[in-house]
Image (cartoon, helix red, strand yellow):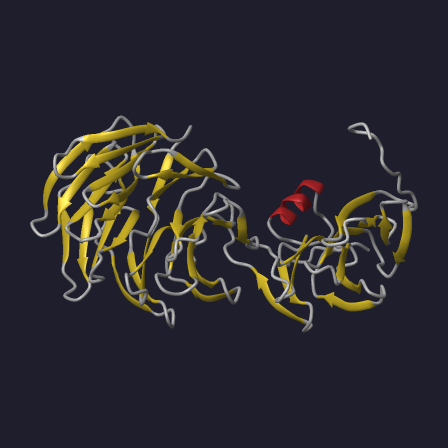
Length: 464
């Protein structure tokens, strides 16, 4: 058959057809959904319509087969999800609960755990156990930018901080939010787990540094030593010392045991990046002026000062004795701590580099950029291993403790999680808007522009 030739013309729907899905094992079977409120099952070999599912009361905008092909799911603007058995085409489940039209469906790839993810115009994602049947989880979180992320060193927990002032700790296995930590009165700039995972440090625009108990979510300690917003935080490997960097150009060392607070000599400009070496001997700090300083923690003296032509926010110790810096000119540099020499430089991104992270086991260095990508580099050769595509600018990254996953923040409320080996997105944590769920159906006196804006912020308007 010539390339591009029409193989079969499937006719039968009486209105537009949008969603299509092929059966995972019987590739000749195709499901289609239509605005005529029906789902049809086709044999593409001869164009025959095998069955018509006609129980929806509004447009059908999503169809999906389970991974084993046993079920077909359909989602509609009637706010319902229907599950059909493929052996006899009989109805199997009916899921309700969304407050607005359903637009997207996806089965989890593991057929032993038949979870169905349902996305709706009501700004939420419901997760259903098809065999249960029960709703496992509704994914919701920050109301604005998910600015910073951190992985727990032992558990499958991901902490996120956003411009809404909230810090949330998510259990990714159970797909639920364990804690919603409130206390910051402004933007949460950065978070970091202690080495044993028992504590979480956070800093923000409210000029405070806070320490939380990760088991029960209690605020344990806080200080306001800085006179301007605090942009960076890092735990010492011993878990007893916290470093913070601020827009007041200072770096502060906080001993959690004694409560002692020591302010190191000022940087030329706002301090945005911090990193401790694995042995705890060195602390690196970077600022908006392009200055990187290397501090001896024992003596609190400056061992080296390096000057770049652009701001430095991303810092990571790439291997023993080597510091990596990422700057706003898109360049990554490697510095030899013993000699102070710059031993390697490469153009890594087309826009600002905001964060660096070292893989816990492999020789991989990750860089996050405002060019909307995360890139994985061979830390020895600077060769590009893989490019991960973000949704928007990526302001923060963190490897999971086992190194299999990488989480990235965004300039929206979404946190994206990639499989490091394949580069595929394996999970996204979405969040509601400030007016999530606000019913404006029938409200009078609003202009079309005001209605559109309210919907963008989470309000819902149901069809008559």
